[in-house]
Length: 130
Image (cartoon, one colour):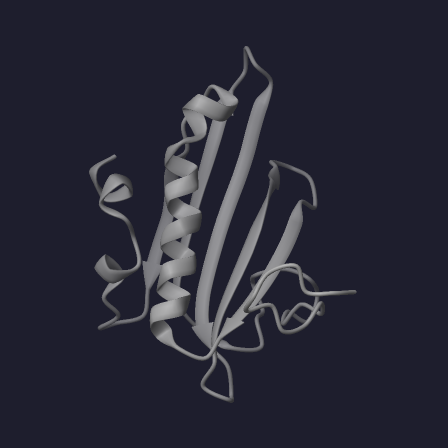
């Protein structure tokens, strides 16, 4: 295994069973979006969970794939909140461009945050406007 992008620390997921329901860090923010089009047979799910681990690193966990399948998981750790925010915003902006790429747009299906956590710094305006 080799890191293909800066910020990737470990190939091992932080979740005990490979799902986002039991992470080994404190989740402070989670957003899920889905894209569906029966005519094109497109059924995709995209989830980002953000939290801090015991070492105060920011953890960004991303799960995506076809709905009903295991999909893929990616975990990235960042020493600063600003770098984690930048990664989350970059990933969410990519979902906004989905109609050009896959022919269907993503719709936010879940947005949750810890009390007092300001999601406005993490979510691009394009997502909020949709």
